[in-house]
Image 1 (cartoon, helix red, strand yellow):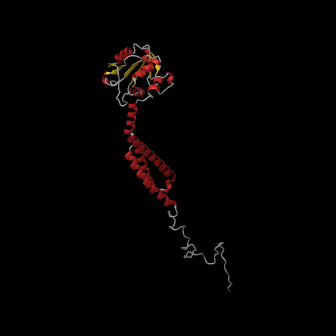
Image 2 (cartoon, rainbow, N blue to C red):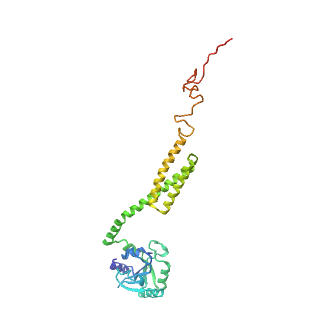
Image 3 (cartoon, rainbow, N blue to C red):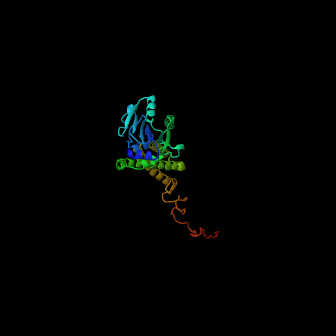
Length: 289
């Protein structure tokens, strides 16, 4: 945090002070501008006031008294609501125009992070709350060398973790698409698949859906392998059922005609006297007495 630059910007804008406020990490801007660790466990409200001139002030809960110790300035502590109210009143006593992460009519929603009740509290003390949007644009967009180094370090530390997370999502999507395809296949071709195979495949699909819902990566891998193998087997069954070698067909082609052969005489050749072109049979007749 560049305290001198922030105070100079406040004076240029005729703003008395910039009030930062947070609990449960509701205002990430505050952590970035002030340089506070984003992993800080925050369960109680804290306030940090940077005046246009003079020393900053901290207000923290007694349970989390050390949360703002990395920042310059004097420190007050509170425990109950009345003590908090009195401390905020004292903190702002010398100031009128207070910048906060607030935007009139929520026009800049990325900055409008302070809850309405807190805005009411500050205004109830006779203060004029103004938007910190211009200040945020100036100081959040300007990173120090240390901040840049920390961001590069954090990105490097999480690179492998992010890659694995992306791969897990891709595996779940692949399995989900496979389930959809197989469900469609069952719906359209159920009569061509043996009942036992249908039941088995439906059971595998149910297991796969469960693994996806639970985000069980090992379960997703196992279900994908199982479904892919079963899909290939079912495809072979359907092919055999529909192809020339399916039930009711001879291995080599169409069913034979009566008499054992294509020609009706068991030899497989054409009938005697048959015209190969048109199928017309010429015969000679002889009268006998």
